[in-house]
Length: 316
Ligand SMILES: Nc1nc2c(ncn2[C@@H]2O[C@H](COP(=O)(O)OP(=O)(O)OP(=O)(O)O)[C@@H](O)[C@H]2O)c(=O)[nH]1
Image (cartoon, rainbow, N blue to C red; front, side, top):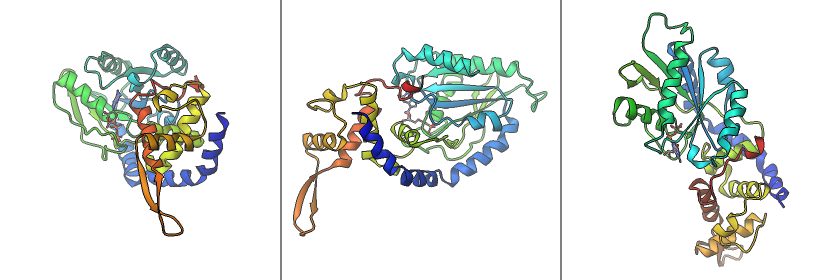
């Protein structure tokens, strides 16, 4: 059953790929250059990524080529959106790959992992040679990551906790909110601790069509660039493949299916979402609004209606 959907996105992938590569626009290029310039002043890199896709889309090139030997901490944010049973498995796997990894939930005011992150970063910097920064006592950290993974939210949390200040970095549900490398943001007076926010934005590493689709589900690329029905089709494929069938109840269907068109038609009908269009005879016809239905399917994944889902489950 799960195979059918792969054909759909395989056939459309060529076009999606070209379009998406064009999307990572000039501001990201500029941002990357600014990031590289600022790296000299930085003692540690915090890479933020979405815990729903701990292996997919991470730009590890940055770790190995750009940041070089500076301490590097991987923060898997949005941990509230995955099943807790994956945490020890992920922790072990990433530790085996020499990652310093922490899981955060920036929506949770009482999340203690933010304080752990602060301590870990200080510890790593203190035990590094801080080779560019001899004599300086302040800590300078750069936050990097692909769009919309929670970089600004993390900065704001750090600032709220350690400086008791209002937000300094804008947060948004759509990818690409952070546009420029801002001046240093202070997050603690003692020790003196600064962060550089970045324009997002490392470009995700994409090996195949499925990566784009996972990135789209996690709102790391904009929906319309991939196409909502295609994203919904991929989600249905993934849910069937992992035998996670609670979508049947969530969408009020008669049973499991790999027929995305049928699912979208049913949702549109249930929600009375129709489009009035002219047919080739210039007559008005009523059609189910498939884009609306696809958006509803995607939203059900993102707001947790379909359960806590880790899309890289099959890569563990
Ligand atoms: N559920 C959940 N949502 C989060 C968490 N952290 C951030 N978000 C949401 O994710 C969205 C993106 O957050 P931002 O902090 O703007 O992400 P960013 O990486 O700075 O985004 P860009 O500026 O696009 O690069 C917002 O809607 C946040 O409210 C988290 O831990 N859990």
